[in-house]
Structure formats: C-alpha cells, structure tokens
Image 1 (tube, rainbow, N blue to C red):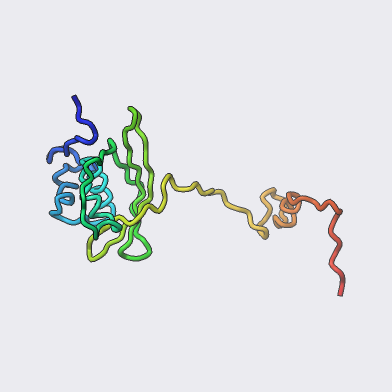
Image 2 (image 1 turned 90 degrees about the horizontal axis):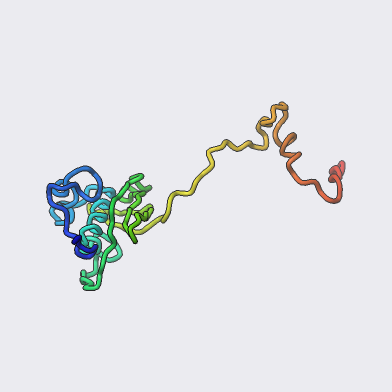
Length: 188
C-alpha cells in the first residue's frame, strides 16, 4: 500500500532531490530545510520550497514566506497536501534592485491520476542575507509577444512600390469617409 500524500515520507539522503537538480537530497535541499545552511539564491530557495511541499515541511514554507516569517508557526493538524511530482525552472532573473530576483517555474502535481501544472513567476527578496518568497508576479505562462517587425508610417512600403507606407498601402487600408474625400486645407 502506498502512503497517501499527507503521509509521504521524505526522500532518503542518497536519493535524488525532488527539486530536480540531479543532486542527492543530502547535497541539495535537506541542509536548507534543516536550517544547516541558507539558500544561496532565489532559485535555491524556490527549489527548497518545492521540496518542502513534497515532504510536507510546512514550517519551512512558513518561515521562508516574507508575509508569515515574523509570525510564530502553528501547525495545522488538518493540513493535507498535494502530490507534487516535479519542478521545472524556466528562468532565474535578477531584479532591478540587487536584493530582488524572479523565478519562472512550473510545478507539476498529480490529481485524479492525471498530471497537472502550476506555472508561476515568483518574486523573491533578500533581507539581511536571507532569501524570502514575497509574491506571485504572474500565474500561467508568459504572454506571447509578436516577433514580426512592424512597418512604420515612414518606412518603405512592403509591397515594393518604392513609396512610403503612409502614402501607399496604409492609405488603401484606411476606411474612406462616407462623406467623400476630405476637403483640402484652406490656403492662407
């Protein structure tokens, strides 16, 4: 019989870490969860927080979230857990301020025998040398931006006529007025 998500045991020290670095649990997240060493970067803290979700270390999640870190931890006897399966880090970017960073990630979990994904871009802040999770900046994948070059009004027309775009195809694309062509401006 396999343990339920609320009863999942932590991985063995010589087993791969759930965060997906390829290192063993003892070499990766266990020292951070056990408070033997601090997370060296926002990405390391994100990986340790994912592992804390896997092993149900809710105290680590509490103390590494800036909003709750200053409050005493009170265990919730009814706290269950999600069956987290894997973590993919898409990007780790420094913020505009030196003690701020962003981690774009997808955390996968199992629900009703299907794997689901939680995609998020999270903000982290370093205070007195300690990294904290501060907030979700975006949930879901990044918006798609068009990579097509836009034609400016004064650029050569893409039709190849040799005229400026505003004098060629842009003029043809604009709807005509129901009152006929506009009157020329009055001469001074």
